[in-house]
Each structure stands twice: as structure tokens, then as C-alpha cells.
Length: 109
Image (cartoon, rainbow, N blue to C red):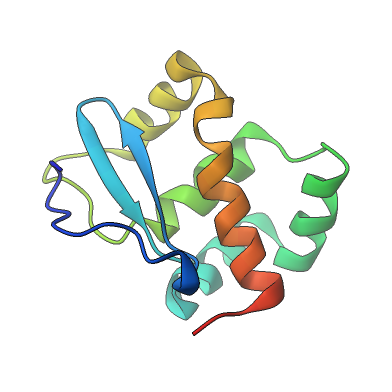
């Protein structure tokens, strides 16, 4: 994989991968990452409820994914993530978002 990620995602830890441009990136919902995302999106449990109802916004998806990236390729700007979400369609990001939200609600190892 490119982007500095040398191992696969550990689903038991809520990790997932997401393709952004030419980079396959590891998404890891650490406590610090979730706190940062919550600071931007508001309470994450409310986000889980909105997501279940199909009312999560593109800005919220971008924020959660951005904060949960385990590593970012050097020089990658957040706008690049947003542009990739639009270019690829948000369906490409939904498996990673679901994994993060599942980890948040259910926990893991």
C-alpha cells in the first residue's frame, strides 16, 4: 500500500482502509481521533443516530475520516480528502465510516 501504511486494517480495533487518490490509507478510530472529530461534528452518538437515519452530512463524513486517518501522506491537505469523497462518491467511504461508528458504539479489543 502507499501512503505509509504497511499493514492491513485490524477490524477488531475498528480499523478500515480508504482509497484517496493513489493512496490506500489506514483509518483508526483512536480516542484522540474521536475526540477531535467530536469537537468538530458535535456528539458522536448523535452522529451515529443521524447516520442510521441517513442524515449524516458530507462535511461530517470528511471530518470523521480526516481525524481518524492513522497517517497522512506528506503534503496531503484535507481538501484533497473532500475532493476524493466527491470524485469517488461517498459510497466508497461508507465502509470505513461504518467501521468507525461500529467501533464507537460496540468497542473492540
